Image (cartoon, rainbow, N blue to C red; front, side):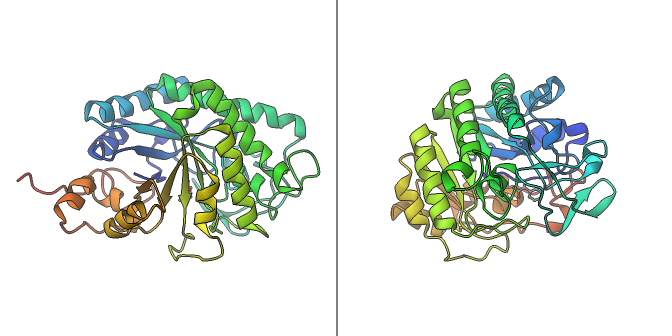
Length: 336
Ligand code: 8OZ
């Protein structure tokens, strides 16, 4: 089950409803949770969970216990939004980013949509502290009972902002050539691997996604290098969003090149059907395939695939925020 933001954690703490939602989906071979902030500084949306404070660990413990009781496995997704945020989340201060470049578009805040602001560029000497926030989040993940973590390096958030030359104009060791732009991700991955063991660490990337006003002049070269670097660090799994946010396939990046540079497991994501997923695995394109929206709407997706039955349609109106409706009320097949 692919990570999906649901904005149903008031005070940034997972609730019993969160636990019920993930428990319902525990037959997934592996659940990756929605993004969870590594710090207050990492917040960018209302009602998204954190994974850095004692109350959050307690909330997540209910989730991991529920999933484990139901026989599942679950990784949390440590997340820092960087510039995809708003001063309303930071006591009026600007969000932080690799460079002071304002994203086009609007932030989703408690007061509705508001224009993005120009972020504050991080000082070089602040960066090790953020790497430590990621390390701390991984420690909290273990305390909360997670089986592992998947670092969120996709979709235009802080790590992706460091990776891409459109959002990273730094002139220090974290900007400029590709090896420098990868440094922040590499340091985060190394810190987390040394804390919890590389076999429990994944990284998610989205090479063709332009969501959140992100872009790069040579994504193939950049992500080939990301794959090689992460392979060298020894992470277990590289999770690749192979589509743009519109869901359309994009041929500007050849994913097999990325796959061949990464010695660990390759997990493909983005618009797969059961048939295309089975073909991707049988043909050697991927080791695993993750499903997002189909899992949101079908808690028993695995059983439905096994029985070749119809799937529930997802309702986009209830993706973000609200309560049980569109969250824990999607029906399972009648028990036969
Ligand atoms: C949709 C709405 C809010 C956040 C991502 C964490 O794109 C997200 C996200 C998606 O990775």
